[in-house]
Length: 323
Image (cartoon, rainbow, N blue to C red; front, side, top):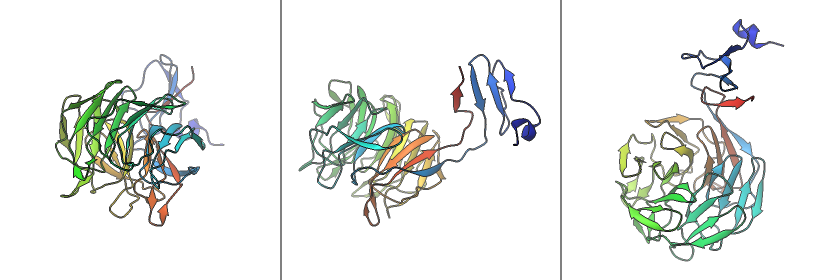
C-alpha cells in the first residue's frame, strides 16, 4: 500500500498553526485547533446520483443542507406534498396548509424553515413556517407573486423579485419572524429568478426573465441595497441554486432548453463547472457550494424524481475534527 510518506517523502506534519503557503496535496495536523487539514489546488466538484424523491414535480420550493433538506409543494396540481431528505433517502412528512408551486423557501436545514407566496388557484401572499414537524400559517407578504427568490432563515428572510399577476416585479420584502416589510428593490425586475443567502444581510440573486427577455444579471445584497455585479456566463431562467451567502453559490439547470449547465460563483465571478447528470428546469436546490443537492424538476421527457448530490474534493476550506 502506498503511504502519504511514499508520495510526499515525509510524514504528516504536526504543527501549532496552518502553513501560510501549503502546496497541493499537503496534509498537516493543527495541535491548536485539534484538526487534521489538507490542501488541493482548484478542486473540481461533480454531481453523483442520489436516491429518488417520492413524487416527481416541477417548481417545488426547497432548501436546507445536503443531509437535511426539504422539498415542498410544486406541480402537478399545486400540491401540498412535503418531503424530507436525510442524506440517504426522501421521506414524506406533514403537508403544507396551502398547496402551491413557484413559491420560495428560506431555511438552513430541515427543522426550521419558511415558505412564502407562489401560485395556487391564483397568486398568493401566504407564508407558512416549519418547526420540524408541522407547517403553521403566519402573516402574509405585502405582494402576492410567484417564481421569486427566497433567501435567509425562518426568522429572518428576504423575498425578492417574481411574477406579480403577470408583471415582473423588483419588489423586495424582509421577514423579521413576525411580519413582512418592503425594503429596497432590485435593480432589474424579473421572475423565475434564483438566489442564495443564509441571512438577510448577505444574499445574491441571478438570472430570471421578464417580458423584455431572459437575463444573466447578478445582484448582491448587503443588508441595505442591491448592487449589480458580474453576470452569469449564460442567460438562465427556471434554474435552481445552492449556497450559503453572497460569496459562494451554484446555479444549475434551467431554461433555455432544460439545460444541465452548472456555474459556480466565488463572490466575484461565475465559472462553468461540471454539469448535472440529468438536464432539467424548474427543479429544487439545497445545500452549500461544496455540498449541494438538486431534486426533481422537468426534464425533456417530463417531470423526474431524480436527485443528485454535488461534492467538491477535500481542500483547505474543508476539514474534519479529530478532537
